[in-house]
Length: 366
Image 1 (cartoon, one colour):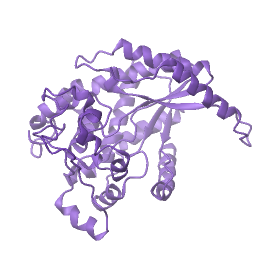
Image 2: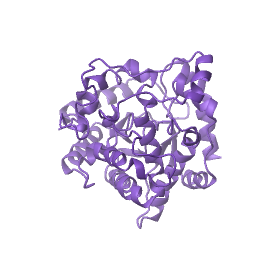
Image 3: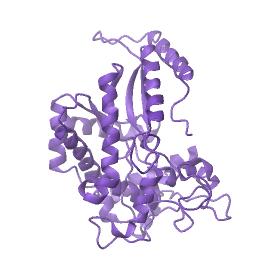
Image 4: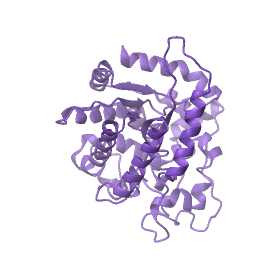
């Protein structure tokens, strides 16, 4: 089984270190607020729903809740984070269950709302028939070269059928472990490759993110994708009610830029993401029992984009948040139930866009 939650004794020791660090920090806010230790705890949909039935795994739930309680016993607060990186193990990352991206691949030629530009050759998973590669439209290559932007490329260290191991339908390992079991995936999801956004520039990630953001709009994809996600959201919200140290639920870690190589899809990437957020909040508003927990959202990327993605976003011209989504977000902000989050990585990229994220937060509040 995947080690989604470490042993409780390890969590307890980590919690003690966090609590001790907060107590001995010496920091005292001038307004008299109390310093408390808090951890951002990743919760993976692929861990919670390992099978296409969409049922939550009791063993996974038990381990997650034991982890939360271990933090609570040491006075450590928890921000629950629906985590993903590169969307799924079938892309070399983590987050969505492999069977969900396999569904997207099996219906690649019948994507709801995409009658002309979608076909069965589009890649949602990595297999011998759908090799991992970076995808930048020709119209953007020359401008990027003129800007001196280094374009990431996929690395292959074993060229013997490089994408067979752990692939969907390959009978060469469980697809949920492709991110760590396939040696060529490891060549493209190491730290250096992450900094280049190699995986984020692949058609697999671009297509999966684009379709995931839009799944709430269409009956078939809503049933196969969005409704399973909402089951997960609702379960995690019960933990806020049952554990006093759970402070909020984050809907999606560092949401990827999406839609390439189709420039028209990429332009609406931000619009689609915030429409997705609004759909989640709308579903919760329709529940018979009101949601009391704060909800955390991030903008595209959640932090500074890589140089290549930042340049592409600027060249393409990203569409803004829809009025409908903005109205829903402001409703939740007015209830003090919306937190706008961005991630700080000590680099010139993050420093350069810090004010942009501050302006984004003020826009949602104002």
